[in-house]
Image (cartoon, rainbow over all chains, first blue to last red):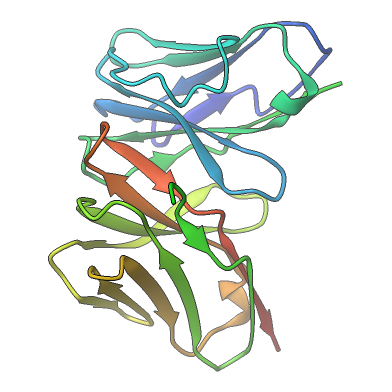
Length: 113
Length: 112
């Protein structure tokens, strides 16, 4: 597609449920990043993929968070047993290479009630 | 510290210059970025500077880099109401993996 696409754009879920967030990067972009933006706060780095590989998972907030990427394309961020503190906008970005400009999606607004 | 730091708010009058400051943490960071986030919109890369440069100018935008102090600034000349947004400073760290770490963002208010 023309830009980074994320789905859903909004998600309301009950505490304790699992959610899956999807990111479609720009075609051909090898690097993909996930960030979290809590209300009124900056961007918190979660994880990046170089191809299908995530060399560093230390940014994930807890073991309830996991991410995968397949076919050097789509990535999913899964949050298990959601908590209210997980409420945030989850932003995905992709770049052609690791050191080139990152293009951001519009984000998924997750609300845990 | 571990964080990229920015002041949270800046208010200027239309037509004045805005200067948004940032301190970053990793002296080996090779790329430093400024992103703009308008209300309800995604992040847009405004400009970036490579670490071997002191200054970069792009139309109304001037980026200054003081590598010794790990200080980055963004100057917007002739600030317009359309410049009202949140401006994020970010560094691309080379240590511990290629992570781009963002500051908390500076909310710029432009008064007519």
